[in-house]
Length: 127
Length: 108
Image (cartoon, rainbow over the protein chains, first blue to last red):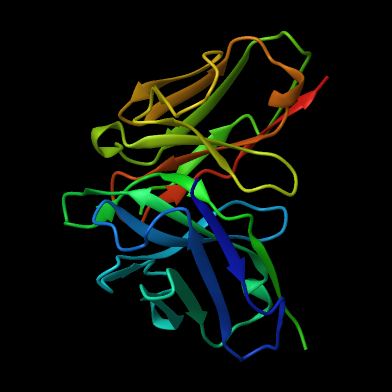
């Protein structure tokens, strides 16, 4: 049974870098069927897709965050990670890792819906 | 990017009632790549419906999805106590994928 588990600091200071890791168990991250994602949800608000990574290291990011986001994969540990730089209070959110089976859109982006999610990690940006 | 607008914001209904939730897109959703998720307090979203009308594994048949183009609907035929939650639509037809702001289904 697939499980995803987020880990990392729950408190980050403004202007610093937020770092989270998602550990995958019950399946190999080195599958050609799925992309692995980060999604966030500010308290009491809606969901925002941050970006995706393939086991090969290929990445796709939301243009609204692209300048500050890096997503990477470590197949030896069956993990993938998120780094978000220059954080502000607006980056306070529950951060979820997830996975999607992908289909290419008309511009060649690997799209899909999110069938599996981690439990989420609340990250607060505050001094 | 495609903006999804969900209505109503809150739906107050009694157990056993029928719930109809709407999701309208700012432009046509490619190939009806539209999903619905249920989220309960303190939990991650759970996938209910994909490709606008296909139920995900283990989802009861009281949940159904319909629509195409820019207008989509999630229907819960008879509300069970465990169905009171927030529901989000999500388009994944064109990048970046986007979500609606959610509809809360609460007990009347």
